[in-house]
Image (cartoon, rainbow, N blue to C red; front, top):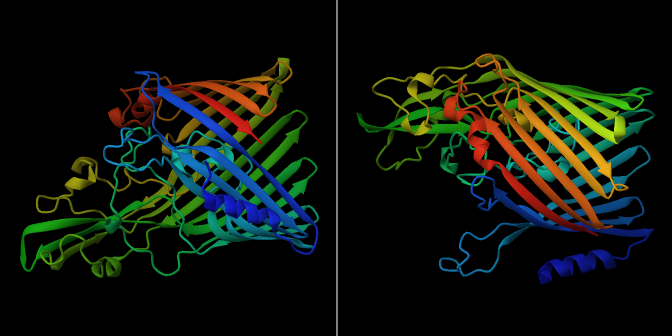
Length: 481
């Protein structure tokens, strides 16, 4: 049920009277969702959007766009023993921005979700809006977060130019120590372990799109701090001149990254070819001066002297690309196929001093494996790079009963590092059917099976092997209005 405050906000948004032509539109959905594991039928307790409402208020050439959602998650304390609050949802203002239409284009200011790239999913160019990892298996804007920004779009015949500026460093929403979430981060640092960003952490993006008779081509540029954190280095503190009880301060940060991308959409009858490719240049800007000025987060009244500083000074260039093919097969079956590729082209960093006097036990990585290149994680790019460096994705969709029933089969195959066994080491297979009960009421039933080879060179740290327990079936009853 909506709160009185939200009811009042929605009421006044509809009764505003201004000069010009007033147009008020709204739509949304109510979503009842259930998901449980195949292994033991236990409920997978992850958040989902139980309610979503979109409101458009237009007054002449000015539009106010709002998206509000209620995120529901089953209470861990369902017996009210440790928490007496009945609330089990959070209200999320996903978008709220003003859009001004002009003779040359449009201006948008506020909190909004941006979409770049030509491929439907897994585009390495689509990096403006951070990902919400809780919604990894959703599609489109449903798995993104809005950012406070200003955007300009300029139209010139068949050419479109865009500019985006955000004065805020925006990061992915990553679950911390959530047992129900299938993808785990290698470590969960605390806020005190992060190095503060220097200056204004602005983000800037530019794009140019040109349409032709056969399709279109786009060029993209982005400059900002990484969406995911990186290991920046270590400080070693002591008590005065005594190193007998030294303490190691693990320091994390966010690299500064530039992206240059190119994309295209080509149309050949009932065949569409889409492609996006991006080159990233990342640099950790934290240096010895930053490390030396950092205050210890480990009881400074005891560890009062900085003995050693070891910033990694990481620099990396990496490349990602996604190619997508869409074709209509016989019997009205739609096929969508994708190939994703990621490669680290160049990497350099300082080394960490691992010896008997200085160890890093709380990094959860063995000393033998503590090569910074081995633990490098890209801070931008396609969301699928957390699973593999090469993937083949295939989706088939068939509509039946005058489009009242839709059956889809999708699969993700890990095709990286197959030499050790000669077979595909991991896969995600999904079968889903959606039945239209009424015009605005749909029931979806889905099944997902995840397989990962435990003999993979990464062993039990292989992502898809870890995710096997997330194999599940799900139901979704959605009413749209």
